[in-house]
Image (cartoon, rainbow over all chains, first blue to last red; front, side):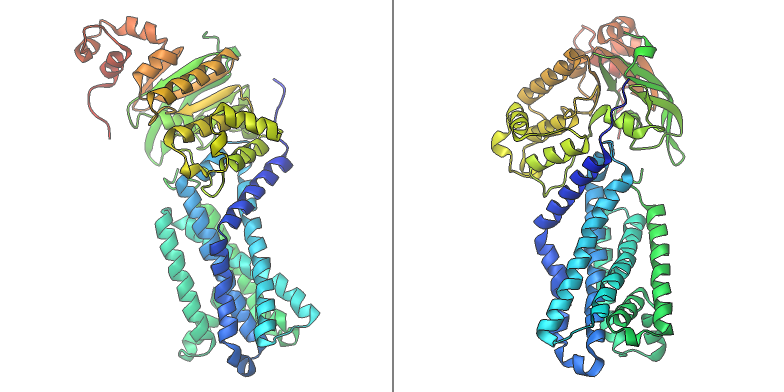
Length: 251
Length: 259
């Protein structure tokens, strides 16, 4: 029989178009994702003088990235797995990794949107400007930091099969990061605890984002934070892929 | 009708495990071009597991499955390109409209879709007025029609239908049978699972009864009735005097209700 197989390009473009339409129809959630970092930037205007623009911008960016990885990616993957949407796609001549790359591409677009939003709000409300190198490096660290939280989201949907439990867990982790980030990075906890927060997945991303925004501030700690971020990402992705099942029954 | 070499679907010695539980035990059958093959069994008998293995959705412990000559595990994309699938609980992205879902799957299968062709498809399934509705807004019967049209959008030579008529009203069920029979007329093969013995008797050319993961009988509905009409369990299951396929099914699989 004559081999008959669709072109990978057609398959992938169809998937990605559908995923972007889905994201567009969920634009209320997208706005919420962008709103929290924007609110932080606006409400922390007074802190810019004290801590510096890169600190406030990097804090806001890190919280936004956490939101994309946990609230955006993990919850949507858990929901679609629960509804059998992935299984329906997997029954077609689509390589499994196309399905995930398509999903991740949407999240990548969200990261770019978030970084732009943080730059614009930071400039408009807090008068924070960066050097051209700072803007470029922030984009790159945004993607590196985003990968960490997408990896964390992947680990959560890999470890937890039930969509509702994934949803409540990611919300809890997100709020935890929000609280730890705000109070920990502002040194509101005992020194040892602050140190732990600095080297947590939240702290390392914030550190590299701040270092990227003002390259003069980049030091050996920032380099270690970069390696730690990559290390966290590898571990989370490894666990997330190893544990992941395409249907919530676990088969 | 039983020449394995010309089969569109050939399943040989299939074994499926979930951890230590064996859901499918050494199952073998084949489906010929122009044949509607029914896989019948009580709940948890192994029907959906067998179907999932054929669809490439779960990896069997052992056994061999070929679709149009392509090994499902070694050449999955080729095998999947030759089959159309309707899952038991089909779900599409709830944010997408019917038109967008059809476009998505046409694109995945590389089927060129002009707006004229799209309209023809929507008219064919009587959903031209619901084109901009989302899948979740459709009735059960309408959802089944969309699922079936998606399963056959690339004109596959093998169509796999997992309980396609469950939850349908009699009109929708008859319409679905007509569609399945139209596929047979085009020499396509259809493998379906069902709990409806009436449906199996009405549309299936051959049937395999599966229970506790084993195929316990394979034949045409008439031959199965003829073969087992004197079986004491089948006679005991009979309620109307005349032996039906349902009597044979209950006689062979027992009266106990499965979880």
